[in-house]
Image (cartoon, rainbow over all chains, first blue to last red):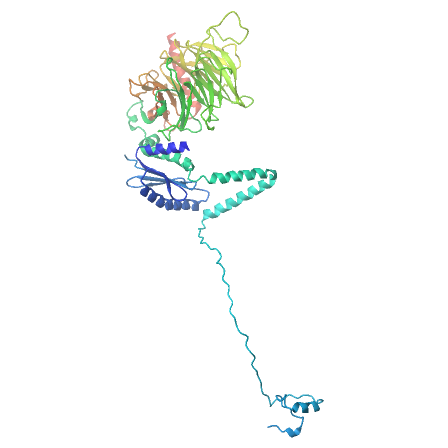
Length: 96
Length: 534
């Protein structure tokens, strides 16, 4: 428990990281360092996208599975991963 | 109108209640004739039964809306689950008496599921993310590591450069100096750094830290130790086992696969630990009982073999170093031999029982694991302590030694006197070394024997000293440790890892034979001038 907490803290403290969000199985952000409305928005939107991405990967080969989805945008990079029903989201600006 | 006068010939059908019935009685014997021409219907209406309505209302059956998609993978998952259930059923049939255990485990399962929002489930993902975030931040370094080749090497004749890549540091290890470095054979991006202190007066705790090239911000594994770590070695086949030697003379074995910060085996005063700092440890091939074992050499003059038997560490003294000659553990005579201090050793790559030990007095002894009473050979190598000895990886006869007297010497173990000497530390065909002024020197014997082909300042000159260096077996990078707890990684430029240029049309031979041939050539060149001089 403490190790994961520490790792998340290190990620948040890393250079360029704007925020991290941990979303539980019901779609509610349980741990985040962004404000609540942003977190809820990210959680809701990214959930659908991740499910769709996962469905696509598995449709092509059912033995395969999605590990990470990386969305590189003009301003920053969003990284999402589904794990055990949870969703972990990190937003980083790598060019700082 | 019917003529009644005929009597009983024609009968009127409907007139049953007329007095004709009396007449029909008299005509009993005559058969009744049906009349085709005279027919009349007679109907009567009965009473209708009263209708009554009766109804009953029930609750509607419970309904729920269900929707799902039937993808390729959902079908696959369902089949896999079905398969697992079948396998479980087979197992249950085989193990019926363990029903009680099943019930208990079911209860436990229920408890686990009701723990609720527990984000330890994203543990694996968070680790991957830390690496991704690091990759993004140090993107240019990662690209350099993979792809950068110094183009200016073509203009510089044979010199090369070292390109600094990642810098590894750990907050809690800032005051410690790096005392040992070792790359992992199986996972070539993982290396171990032992932290301790070379300062005799300032001895404190130490640390064993593992870094991966994929995450330079934080170590992968951290093991704090009571005493400073002086040396370590990762087992070549079982790369989760690490042997560590400490300043207080203990040796320990850590298992990376186990949770927990304590070593799995540790030597104590009872189990034969050294009385002086352990300078080097080396894993050996498994012995005949398939137990892992490793050797250690220490300043107390003993070379000890440690065997991992079940839960214990069993030690065997292999050799006792002394100034005059080895002394076996025999009866205690009146003579107390002066014990020499061992500082370094190395085992021959092909001949398993042969090994070299370097001492503080500057001598190198060639020993065999089977003879504990005598050295096979002694070389008067240096005037000061021997810091390291290493057999050549390819050439079976050559070894190299380096010492605090600022010289490095190459030896052929069949010839007792030295073959050549100059300053540095060896690894394969290129040699690298470091000085106390913070520069790394790389030598290539083929090109130039007395001058480095690369001299580069790696750390700030006056503040830090470099203490250790290691080549990566696969990637063209080296790691350098310093006395501040930093480990810097550097990439070798193309000139530094050049293979001989092939002449047009000639096939380029590869492999150990080439290296052996090169070495032979070098040695013969060196010997000739000596013979000529004589």
